[in-house]
Image 1 (tube, each protein chain N blue to C red):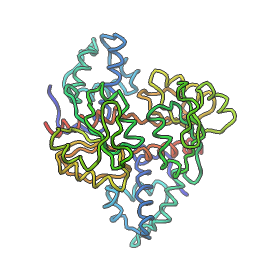
Image 2 (cartoon, chains in turn green, yellow):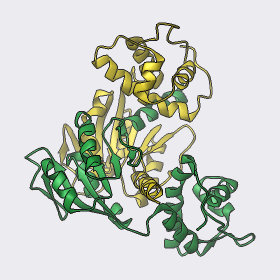
Image 3 (cartoon, chains in turn blue, cyan):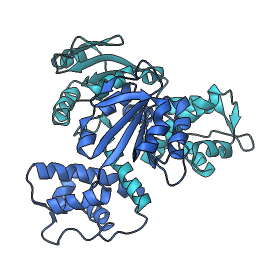
Image 4 (cartoon, rainbow over the protein chains, first blue to last red):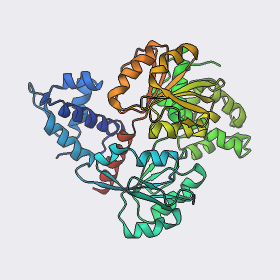
Length: 211
Length: 211
């Protein structure tokens, strides 16, 4: 696969959406689709779609469009989903437990290896097949298991400390639900889900549309 | 407050972050801050910060910087947080219950009025002070209560139908956790939290940094 360097974050953020729509087309037994038809479904312009996909190679044929299965497989390869990812959840409160129960992630190849919490009332509880362990055991766990992604659901005042420990023990991907901006080395990828920020954006837009 | 029209979505998406950092400064009894100092904390350039805030009025003074309390109050007003918002949660599964239990939203002025689910095993359960009701009761509930924001946590195959019913009954704001892109009239604001897309972005970036 030929691939341009320095793909913009805007393109990267659209890739999962291609994945979702192509999977839906596959499920509906659609074999091929033009960029115009895909555009109507996905809500990006046809020219945008062509530009996005051209960042990664030469897909689609003039007059034929895209072969859905091929394009889906390419997107899988681009996103790095041809392999599985080992994950752990740190902070087994409401959000942490909800994510552990979310079966969609497993289907995408994200396997939950462990859950950790500082609260002794939570340790020992099993969520699906995974027992919540004391947070003090993380370091040893990381020595014994390869973890690709740590899902951080701890309170904000504890998040940076936990992040530092994860980084020290070789974790290279952090999915952060704590409402702070973590400081991490460049080779550690942090992807934030800041729920409050999303809700405040919604409040702003509601007011804006009503004023 | 003077305000430019057509504020870009990039600026809007940064506003909640200003809110979060200013609140933190207030909690730490910081009275004033220069755009340079704020820049170091928040991670935007000082010039970016000045540009962002200039969209909404003339804050800060040359040589003094920003009065933290004043700027915080301005951001509150810009975001529309000087008032409360009535919310309901539809879909009381893992994510729905986790959001209901998340106390941070209430502190920001988002009050949970009701929860609804189609599953009879969930109806009747109380999350904090709110009893989960049968989803068939939504229409009547919306006639009797003003709801600003519906938080949609239903499965994807049901989300558009529920969205249509909400829209028909006057809801103008939808916080959507279902992994689909909802179709709604222009005066209805939909803000998405697509967890799987965020996770796939993380996978892409991890692969990218390791290749």
